[in-house]
Image (cartoon, rainbow, N blue to C red; front, side, top):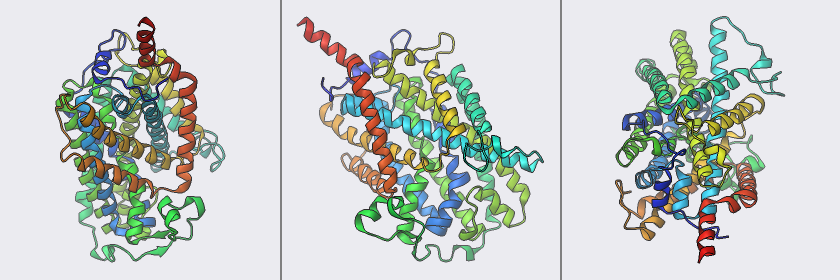
Length: 496
């Protein structure tokens, strides 16, 4: 069997019109921009700002956010060309199938499962913490047994996280248009809260908190062995906090903030005018959120000394530190509402990847069954929602969050390589959007992704390679022999 057999762009587009596998085209360019903002504005603003400033970059955390956005922007330009040329569900999986071949496509699809499913579980757990904090403010205290997974602070099961995933799964089954409307309302609320933080926080900024803006490097003795960034292991560099090495290490963490903008591409098959709308959705959402992240991190670092920022709720804690607890409550509400959209869109993207892989025969066919009334891949949505609910409710996910980052970066890298390949192998394809300055932009995107990846811990690489090995085994046992492209090729050769 040819592991590098490709599925033509024409066949990929033709498959979208198959009866029983046809998704509804309900999304406009604005819907896609809002989807992108909805998934990006979340954990990065409400949680990571304080942790990264305190432990890695100091007040210069804004530089880390901007550099991470630059890496994403380079990849976004490559995604935009692919998504407008191959407007089919599945995102990087579908793009890879048309350029790199079936096995690399399977690997990237398996990788996207890691990114989207695990990302949804991680964010659900974060939402649960904010939800419990908000209830505490109202005098309602939930027992630890239903707030934490087994073995963690007296926990048995994280009930709020499970409940959130199940409710969001139900919304996704009802249809992408309903989901987009819910997301639009949520995005308005959380963007309003973010703007409130920026505007109100400016009145409490103290110049002294920015000095030094890039603190001098300090040895980080808490990071040892496999927990050290791969780059520092390779070159024998002692792990440090602050300085430029601290800023670079912070990029690998804050990259999590931008995870999900590529989900806009997974909705390609549900866009009304994908050739025009997808580039707008991808690039527009990324530019808007990068500006918001840089502004918020700069304001919060100016309100409170970076070494005193909260790991869990830095925005709310910064306002408490200046005597304005009322703002803190509003921020908690924004976080609770805002993280709902992140979970919703991550699960939307995950179900579409499952749908695309199943339609190609690499996963069982019932995963691509479309609901006759709602026009959604309801079985794959329900199954994935159940798996994510179990992960969120019963498994501690702090360490596994770094796996989400490396999985996303790997997808970005392959899409960037795919643009170069498709330009050479199919120069005749109509491209509504063309990545500028090829091959410079794709090459810079590959190098940027590799740079961020080697700043992730060595142990994250071990876990990632183990996950990829499991995927290879599943492909060998099922996908290799059930592939529609492979079966079609076998039938043709048999007839001849």
